[in-house]
Every structure is written in C-alpha cells, then in structure tokens.
Length: 302
Image 1 (cartoon, rainbow, N blue to C red):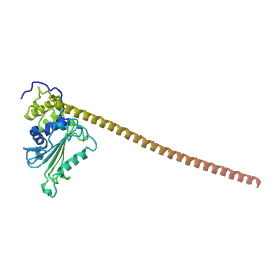
Image 2: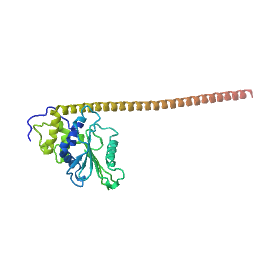
Image 3: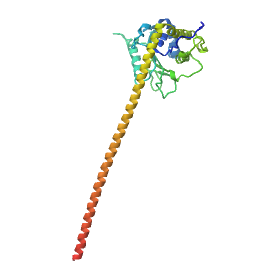
Image 4: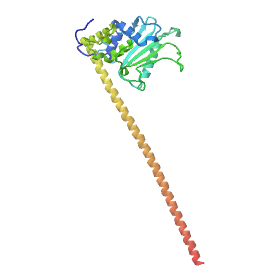
C-alpha cells in the first residue's frame, strides 16, 4: 500500500486513546498479537496465535470521559492473560500500582470453588514515557518470581517495563525495537514517505490507525481531549513535585534552624557555666586574698 499525502494532524501514538486503539481495537487484533510476541518473545511457551480482547477500544468512551480505562487486557488461546498499558508520567507509587494491577488480574481468574491449578500465567507490559529506574541504563526490565539463584518459584508470567526515553537505537534489529521506535517517533513520521524500518504490514497498519485519528473529526476530538487532559495532569504533577521540593527545602531549613537553636542554647549554657566558674574563681580569689591579708595582719601583730 502506498500513501500519497501527509496526515492532516500529527498524532502521538503514546496518547492513551491512540495507544488503546492501536492495540485494543478489534480490527487491530493482529497488531496486539504481533506486539505481545515481539515483547514477550522467549518468555512464552509458544507464540501467541489468537487473542480475545477483554476490554476492546470504543471511541465513544474517550470523548469527554477523563476516567476511561486505557489499558488493554486480553486472553490467548491457552488461557494466558495479558495487560498492556502506556504511562506518560512516572511517580513514586507507580511500581506498587503495577504490581497491584498484575495481582488483581492474576487473582481474578479464580471463581468460587475453583482450584489453584486453574490459574494461568499473567503478563503485564508497561510502556513508560518517563524514566522510572533512573539508575539503570537498560530500557527493558523483566520482573518475575525468582530466588537469589535465578530459580523460578512459579512460571506464571511477570511484569515487563519498557522505558521509551532510554531507547535510542538507530537501527532496528528486532520486532520489539521496531515497536519501541514507532512509539518514540510515530508522531514525527511522514505517512507518505515512511522509513525502511516502517515498511512492514504491521507498521503500515499502525500508521493507518494514526491516520484515522488525524482525519476523522470525532477521533481527533477524542485525541485532543485526552492530550489536553494529560497535559493538565503533567502540569499538576510538576506543580506537586515543585511543592514537594519546596516543602522538603522548608523542612530542611526548619531542621537546620532547630539545630542552630539547639547549638545556640548549648553555647548559652556553656557561657553561663563559664560565667559561673568565673564568678566562683573570683570568689575563691577574693577569699584567698582576704586570708592572705589576715595572715599578714597576724604576722605584724605578733
């Protein structure tokens, strides 16, 4: 398929409604399968061939709805569960949220009276626009239930983190890298002149999804609404971070002031102690002088 025109509006595939349309729409089920196989790869006992999307994308849920569920949940032919989510902002409680949502999806498999043997592996994939693990240069992190020797307690999935900001490969060598590059650079791509790494059926289908958001009025309205909402959230986050920084600085100054006050009180106490010692010495000196004068007077009288 060859494109002859640029998109009317640049579309960022990281905006959550676009992300969910890419991987959570029924018509893009093939993209979801390709993405899951690309990211999870060797961790899977066998490649995924089919999935049921448990919460499919519906464009109506995003228009003027700031509380839309924006992750993608699916089940494959073997009963394994998948959760995929994009996160533009990092914050301290995000790892706890990741673990909680994975555990919630995993535990929800058991109905009343069902045995633990019915539990199936559950995989969560998080794409992060901001760095979360800042001390680690790697852009892919795989968290699974292992002991210190690397032995799995139970091979039942785990949590995969993909930090987009750390991904900087110019040359695409794997399908995982192809997806990461798409999410990083999708907004800047020229649909009429796609680079070589975008020349696959999956990437062309992904670009057609971006084009739909660009060209269709309702879809673009949903995109703009979500983008504005996320910008507001980003501003709120930055303001809160600044407030927390100022409060921390204020607390540090208060602690320093209390330390200085304590040191001042200690110095004052030491000063008072020295003054008391000085007065005691003065009294002792005066007493000694008086005694000396008395002895001299006795000597004169004798």
